[in-house]
Structure formats: structure tokens, C-alpha cells
Amino acid sequence: MELSLYQIDSFASELFEGNPAAVCPLDNWLPDELMQLIAGENNLSETAFFVPKRNGFHIRWFTPTSEVDLCGHATLATAFVIFNILDYHQNIIEFESKSGLLKVIKDDDNLILNFPAQPPTSCDIPQEIINALNITPIECLKSEDFIAVLNDESDVQIVEPDFEELKKLGLRGVIITAQSKKYDFVARCFFPGLGIQEDPVTGSAYTQLTPYWATKLGQSLFSVKQLSARGGELICELYKDRVLISGKAVKYMEGKINV
Image (tube, rainbow, N blue to C red; front, side, top):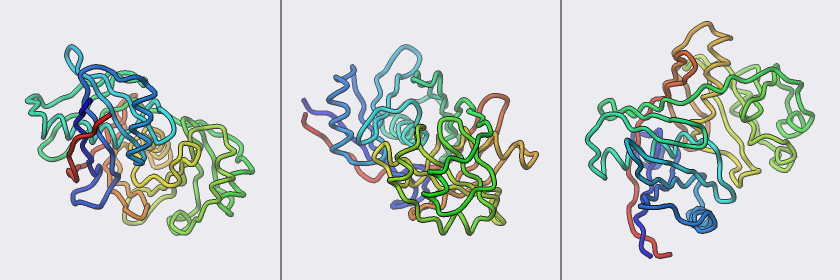
């Protein structure tokens, strides 16, 4: 069986920036085991699979080791493929997903993710986070991930996590964040339990970070930098119970796979 496969740099305006994702269009779902093998072979943080349905598409995401409930950058990559390669002529795409209805809006060369907000709640700081970061956060919260709030942007930059310690935690991953001078806030994201040590740009993290910083800073619109090696810039907006996450994408590769 021959399938199309695209690799897209999400949250990037140029190649080799942002977060690369694989996108595999399907007519019908493949067996879960096969989709997991394809994602493992791709060895990117996420591979997105989608099938058409009435009035939209159904989307699923796989890391190299497991399926996840929500992924921002691979949804952005999928929307880029649908809008720019598959000649979809509407300005809004609706995706059915494990996290409910997701929308992507095309605004010139910007793509705007419309995702459900996942406000975090305050929690005690797990000792594993202190051990892993070698720094004590000023605040800790949890939602889909643990969120460790650090005192300063420079603290976020210099952290070298102990990933084995982070693997001991029960949630999807750990996000570290701090207020910024150039941006409203910065972040880094670690998911070693999913086979991803540091994710370059993590759209779904901002469904948690945006509600948090809206409460702390008293605003709803944010300019954000994810401080990974590749780096990525995002515009995030809290709108009622949704988060709007805006970015660009660039095609790196397209080809065929035989499975």
C-alpha cells in the first residue's frame, strides 16, 4: 500500500525553524498498530493522520511511542497540507478529535488554531520536578501537564533537565515558563515519557499557559517565545473557553511511503 506523506515545519516562517510534523492523509483509518509503526519510523515528535468526514475531517496524532489526545503543531501542519496542497477552498477547517471539535482558520499565510482552553490548577511542587530542574519553581500547577513557573526568563533558558526524573511523573509532561521582557512570556516543554525529551514548539501547551498568564497578567492577548534550540514564536489569545494560537508553516518534504 502506497501512502502520501508530508513533513511540515510548524510555527515557522522559514525552513529548519519551529516544530517539524509528519502528515499522512488517509481515505480510511489504518490499524492503530500500523499508524504507531509509521510514527515510530518517522521519529518526529508527532505524526498526524486524518480522514475526510462530512463537513470536515477526523484527526489523530501519534508520537514515536504512543497516541496523544491533543497536538497543536501537527494540527497546524495538517491544516497547511489541506489548505495549500490538497486545494481545500474554504477558510475554516473543522477537525473531530479526541479533544472535541478543533478549528483552524486561514488568515493570509497565518493559520489560527481554535482549541479548548485547559486552565491549570495550583498544586504542590513534586520533588521530582525540583530534582529534575535543579531549581525550585515559584509556583506549580497542573492540567494536561505539570507547569513549573520560574522566577526569570534566564532560568528557563539555562535549565538542563534530568529526563529520567521527569519520567517518574504521572502526567503527559512538564512545561517550564516565566515572564519575559521582549515577549509576554516564554516556555520550554519536556515529554520524555512519550519519547520526546524537549519539544521544539508545543501548540497544545498554550491551551494551559494562556489561561494561566491571562490570570497573572490581566490580559488576553500574548506574544510568546518557546525557547527550544529551533525556537518558535506564537500569538495566543484567550477567548471565552477557547484559546486561539496563531502561526505560520513551511513545507519541507513530500513523498510516498510503502507499508
